[in-house]
Image (tube, rainbow, N blue to C red; front, side, top):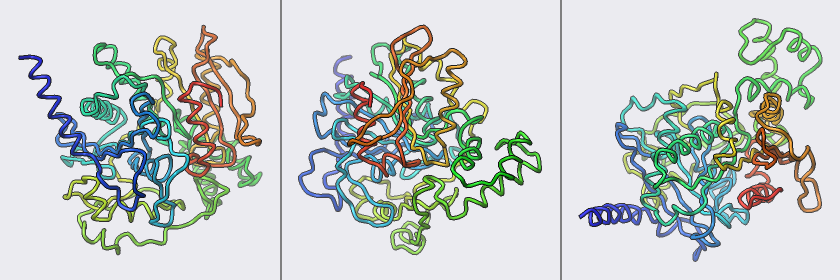
Length: 452
């Protein structure tokens, strides 16, 4: 009877996932060399939370190639940005609803899974309004539950090597999820997830040196702030968290000087969205859409937003018809743990006993999570004896030019490197979107376990 019950449950799961098959991707070319799925993963005992996922099988060998989960940041921004603007096989520009094939898609050699997380983001379902209140721990726990549910529906991928990846606030999402996976594997050795490592780009990790606390020095060294402002900042021991009047004044002046500069890549044009989402037919049809908050930036997602709100796309992707219009970011009541970030997890994640490989990459013209902050928290790990350098700072080549810089580390007491930090030269926060060839090179060398 036990075997019959297991088979019955498995057949139900497989039937549900089979229903997630996207039979035709609107606007996509015919005879694509991969399969797409889109559906929902219902988090148990959660008052209705459901994570929307999109999955692209590998274009090479789905049964053998790695499986990679991608998470965008925010907190509260959709991974459909990654799927359809950054590293997915079919992408849009920032301005037009014109789909094109991405020749540097990460699914050329890996099956790519995308979660819209936390619940309530994008086309994921929040459930009870109380679920609007969430935090890093809840997000990690839900992502783990969603991942376990996904493996139930796709059991053929359980033995594939598995990696977690993401950018920006996923510098929190990714390590916390990987830590939860390690804990799950310890408690459930017979059903463990085949986690091999993780990959983070321009990810906030240690709030004391990252993001706003790296912004001032980034602006100074890039010639955006004058001597008087910089000297006042340094001489008054200012930081992003200071409430001293002079520090608040200095910070406001710094942001004023950033007017019309692209915060996510200071050398890219600043383009303000010229599309009125509220006037679109799609938005009018789903008039119960939540009004979204957050920083208005000059890297619009006009084409993607128009596309994902087309009724035909919603139907093809099996989107819940009761949901409002899709937008990139959702204004959740998100409780960020500024005292811990994710830096506290790295001594555990770097432990050789866990067998993880870690790569952290950084577009070096990003003002949102500047390279200088990432270098600082990594150097702090060296100072504390958590890691040591195995290969010094050096160039990595790409097409007979310098693609960026790279350095390798090993955990304390080991000579085997398991942590690589690298820059992608001359690009910013969404480096794998803006420099796709270099971004793909960074990715493929990581999953192959070689230096870039």
